[in-house]
Length: 213
Image (cartoon, rainbow, N blue to C red; front, side):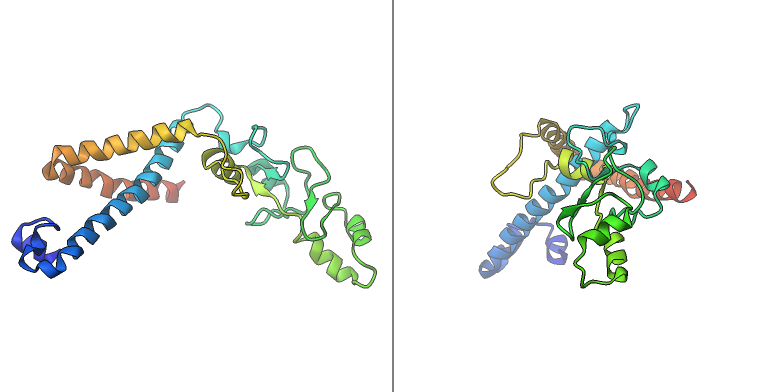
């Protein structure tokens, strides 16, 4: 970077003085391309959430969507269930109207919050204390916002044989993000410098609003 600023040359031409190091300039360009692809993807996510946030009911606050699973819980469920942990573990409230969520540890189905049924599924050699720990750790759920991001936005599938459906919405958001990036480059470095004033200040404004909220 210092050599480029001193010589006022790009990464491809600055190394003509040392032909042996021309590959460094090519590597710098490739790294910049990878970084652009990486951050443009997150810009596409941001544009998607901005578009979705103008709806009257935020789609990531409900569990009645087609992509939601029976293990989904909302903020209302979390407020009324004191056993909801950060990783989506609940011990006192049925989710999606079902009182029998999947028990991942025991590999069986047990009514939520019913300790006697959990004890009945535990081997007789285990103590009641072990059964209680299963009650508080085996009933795993996922939040509505997490399912919105993974199952709706990313169309995430665990099985590699299920590539999922074509997400036309995210394709449009990525196209818009690349158009924004192209416009900033076409306008030149002086116009880009003015944009930096906004992009640097806005995150601090948003953090301040979230802090006082």
